Amino acid sequence: MAGSDQYLTGRIALQLGFLKPEHLAEAVALQQKSAQSLGEILVARGYLTTPQLNEVLAIQQKRFDAIDPVTRRRKEA
Image 1 (cartoon, rainbow, N blue to C red):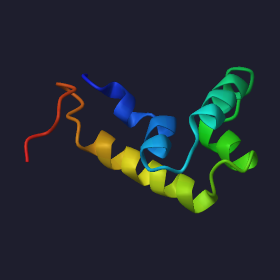
Image 2 (cartoon, rainbow, N blue to C red):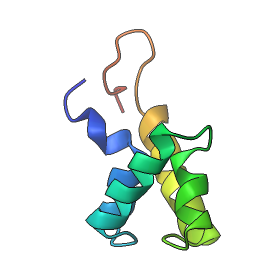
Image 3 (cartoon, helix red, strand yellow):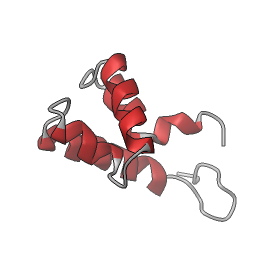
């Protein structure tokens, strides 16, 4: 799937201007040592608000919904 990073929580938050790259890097490092999701870490550290995380997750869900699970390509409109 080309451009698969468009589905990543951190990338979406960066694209929306909600997050600084250095905060994302820090949160990803913490996530690797934790059982918490990236979103939980970003909110707990104060890098994202809960409404911002919800917006990111809604966008992420829309992008996933647009993919055909069999072909793993964008669904035809």
